[in-house]
Image (cartoon, rainbow, N blue to C red; front, side, top):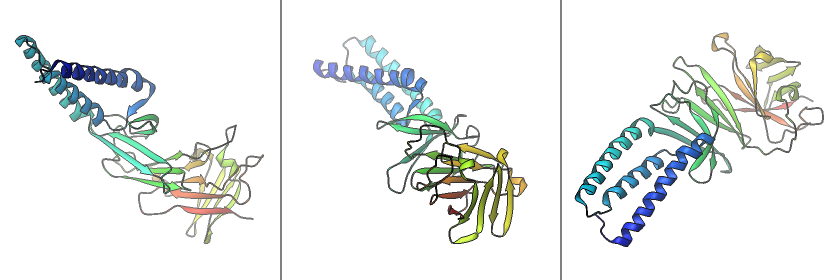
Length: 288
């Protein structure tokens, strides 16, 4: 145990600072949606506090016993919470140019939803979205997910959302935009879009009706099958038993809106299939 008075003061001050930090994490950061990216940091600090409590020497024998008892109780409690709440899967996916990152955090043993965090500082992240169904099915733990970076600044996450194999798709945008009003993706796609290098495959949008041609087959969708995510992506999803593919339409970085809300000439889109297979996204251009 540490007996030097100056060292004891320093260690005591460190312990107080660590306790204050933990209190701020729980009482201030968490209610505002800010969390440690890696939970082991929180429990590691708790272990450091416990060690500091135990090694600071006091002359009174009974006080020392109290120190050790408190330290033991805290050790057991922290280890128990660490086992159940600290077992976390964290995915940090970088864009091809390393300018953007997608952070997904999943608690393996808890019935909480997997969250997407936007880094704040070095060790904190702000919760910005959750993955549907992730409170029951742990897709990161089961390795049933795939991340596609489209145009370098939009991450499309395809993941299994239940034990029966249901898939979901989320698009997370990192692209800077100067648009001062909300833009609607579906109407901006009006017209016929041809796959680069394979014009027999195409995507067509007209007044809420969608036609998707793939490998000689035609599939039809309507507005009820679509969900806009941000201002650069549209998820088109139907029940798997309908026998039609689900996918996301992402506006590439060269796609800009004109004054009528349509994509300007020369802009392209990408179609990202909703599958965990090795299928890649395809680039489409508007038929002239």
